[in-house]
Image 1 (cartoon, rainbow, N blue to C red):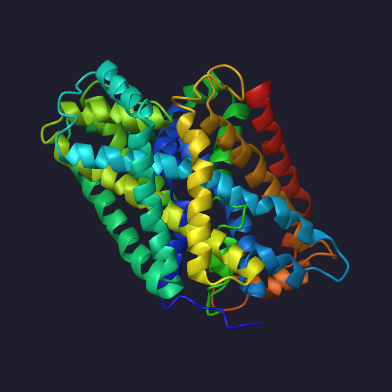
Image 2: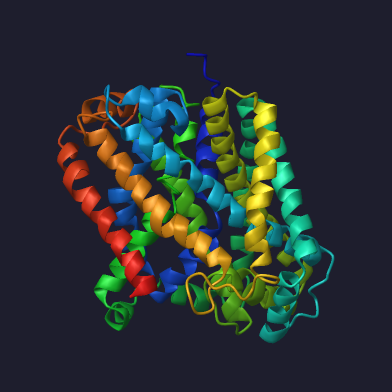
Length: 457
């Protein structure tokens, strides 16, 4: 087995792994559902699920990566017992990152467009919700503009990956993630000065038991479990690949704690940026793409110095999205190199073309193919691709990982513990086997079923 490249610094690993987890969901989903489901009450429930489900899954992927020193293309074969068939799962798990990037790259292109136009003052007259909605609809109706913006961010991200793990991914992503946190703290401090700060924070974080009564405890629990589960992007091997580049100086429980802490900090701080701004200018916050491209665009247009603050916000969002692009692209390239013994540069060129082609249906789904509604109603091709990832690949992949490290024919819990507990830091006890074996699969299965019910029920 050839020597595996490793990160030069622990900070580099932590920021890059966190960058893989930190993404658009931290900003356009977490703050909204926190305010909707009871503020601080929801945050406490979310943190409980993050500790109980998210962190264990994170340690599992990192353990598989660090123990095998290979991507999912070879990890199962190295760790599974002879004559077992666990490696067949890689066939569909490897497809997951391609589907994810086929729509995530397009959304990142939207962010790039909005960042450039914000700094140039192009949105200064978008002072109403209707005008902002029309502006966004105009972008969606111009496939060439979207393609150019998407191509820009995809080529730039692949260029970073082409330089290698240390010279490219670590050297570029580490300062970018540091700048992301600087921008977020800067914008959070700015929010304190807004007239609607107190009102926004009360809506966001004040414990509100009436919200539990309004929505029902089961719905709140399901929302918290879903957010904790999906925020880390576990289940498709994107986190696993960074385990292959880790050293063994620290236990995986310790590293997972830092990654979850960074991810949660971004989510919480995003709410401090968003809600005071919305309440200061009388705009009702909502979730999804409309929060970024319609609601907040209206807020910035009405704000003094809005072009600057809007540009800064979308720059922050680009850093969050591009950090995910780079991380997932790295996992794709590592799989390709392991499968086909390809050079890194050749793998980058081939996969750049593949990703661009796979992105076209999603891009055309808002114009030329807008009559196609895969999930019924007003659903788009992007909604269908997100459904494949969020409701299928991630939960089923996570379930496979849990069973793989607890099954005697797989990696086995003893081997998992030996890998996870190597280094300095807290250890995972042996009795966790029963929790991993019987509780976590049930939790993941419930989440999988609930996701289907919410869409097709």
